[in-house]
Length: 403
Image (tube, helix red, strand yellow):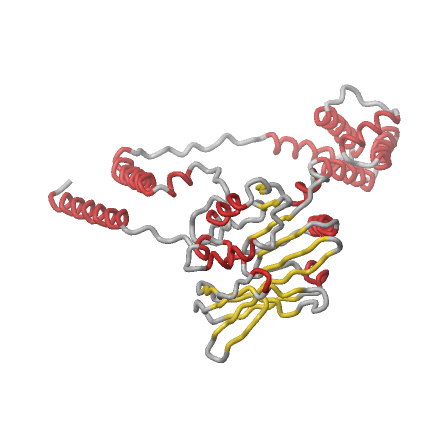
């Protein structure tokens, strides 16, 4: 390596080292992903909320990690409140029916989500809409609880979202408005419904379009925790409370070992340095020592050419009978090796057994073997008979191969 090359290499290493040092000392960016996971301490995690609710209802609280359909199905005696909070909650039809039947028996279903599935809205006579502030432009939202029983008159603000979901239509006969949001834009002040309660059979359903009220960022900002406390007041503390951990955007645990490396600053950069070192080694060392690999032509398989020649000879001599005999023998040998059959008979039990293993109908299996028997008993065969035999064999093999 010449003198200039050494200088260039030193400059490159120093530049790369300086860049990595700056990146290492750069402050860690805030993760605004809306995970809503109980163990996450990021802004949109629910670690604070779960800590508070476990302290307020220590004896009644149960953390549920199974799907609602499975959890309720395995515990027929459940009663109390089932609590859901996530950015988006979409139940399947059977799961929603299970939750509604459970609620109808005298229980409470609490769902905080920006979106609700259409069947739930149709069942309760609701509809939702969203107010957008503009592209990547946050809007100031003022939330307040309107139920006078809890005496919470102070409003709270939230200014992280570019969109505000709300109930555009409710069942005015059955629904009770519990919370509203005031949206201030350049045009005017809009007041919309964000929290409602509606009786359902002997139970009750509470819906909120503001799940951020249960996040770490919201609860640690100003007096916003009072708003969340007002929402918790709708939970019956004398009965069990089941907090869902299944419908979450984020993962409660990470199964990949790489998460430990990439989520720890020191290990992440050690991993990057190891990759860069391996790349440099391959570029400089591998280029010097690698030798040309000779190309060795594979041996030619003449079996197919031989088989084609023999078959052409039979066909030119119009010996369809011999061709058919060979095809039948090869087909029967294929059946023995494919389905591990010791012997092939003409009995109905054998046909039924082969039909079950191959996936064909008993009628089709009987048809194939009957035609082969017909060919063996015939003195002369036409091209049409040979073609039909080949078609039946290929059809039998195709289904066995999953085609």
